[in-house]
Length: 260
Image 1 (cartoon, one colour):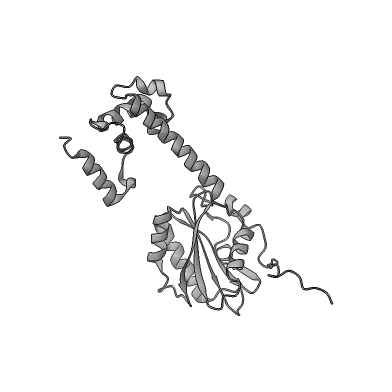
Image 2 (cartoon, rainbow, N blue to C red):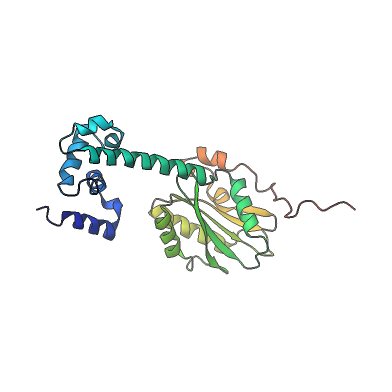
């Protein structure tokens, strides 16, 4: 019954990714290189039964792992190496990915990006649930309507980057930082689409001249879904909106002009 099992497991990953895997399937797959031949599925079940969860398996002492039937030195070592790899990956992610937890940070990011741009451009910033920036991608150029918004492209980026939150931004070249009815429709369209896939639209900014306008703040207020815990609350946004867009303006690009 186990003939070709490992091949079928790999095919399952190719077809649907790891999201469809149960904990024991992740563990048995991780043990494939350590146990060249043998039923890693049974060993994975035994490990989880012994320690209670996949998390507890990875955190178990090396000597305790060796006491589990079917687990040898190579398997125990592989499990401990995986835990260390997870820890280093997480540490690297925290250290290298900048966090954007304030509106002024995001506003300045886009203000610099739109310097000298003469056409309307729509960007999407992608974040994890700690608001670490995963990527920022231009998804369209020219005026975008609610029916022409590239939702498929945005969706592909979210899946590719495993994003939990999104910020949209577009510019009004030679215009004002004031939303049009079309801007409102685009915002609502994207927000509803993202809600359906459990991704938070944190804000949609309009950048013009040296000012910005946060559409969601004025349209929906502070009490809405937080990207940090995916719950409806106001705590995140009370800290996020650190500047008043009615009073705030970006500094001149080249500093203050010299006095004559």
